[in-house]
Image (cartoon, rainbow, N blue to C red; front, side):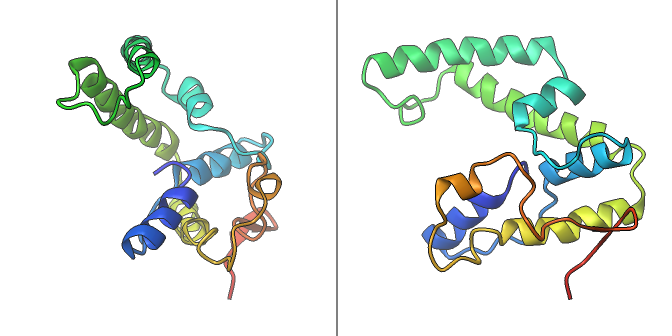
Amino acid sequence: MFDCRFVSDALLHRHRLRLDGVLDLQLLEVVHRRKLKMNHELLRDSEECLQVYANNPRKKFVKRMAIDEIQSLISRGLNPWAVRPLSTKLIDKLKADVDSIFSLYDALKRQKSSDDMALVMESSKRYANYFRSYNFYPKKEFYRNAYVPHNILLWTKGKCTTLP
């Protein structure tokens, strides 16, 4: 998944499902940048990550065609995802989105040690619990910034440690 915080929170509160065993690609990308000694304090969004690591002009074309159709449906007062059957353009966009996630995973997983992957898995657990751990939803300024949230990735001497 990419940025599992919101999906995890929604699944818990709407369906009483607790997301577990997630590998969050947003955190994997942060670990990747840290290993390259690049700025690793800021989060990148999925589109930026895809552009950097899994740039595919065909997927961009498919998504652009679907966006035109989505905007057309919205301009007519329709919810594009509620119209059934889904159009071929929208189905192709969904396929391209899923394929992009796998491409991003493949690109980021290369040259990662088992320690790096264990770190990302452990950090992903905390990331999935990020909103679920609050008694009330924090202000947007708090969670809509571009920084890696506090106590998600805990670095000491170049390695990440886990919370007790």
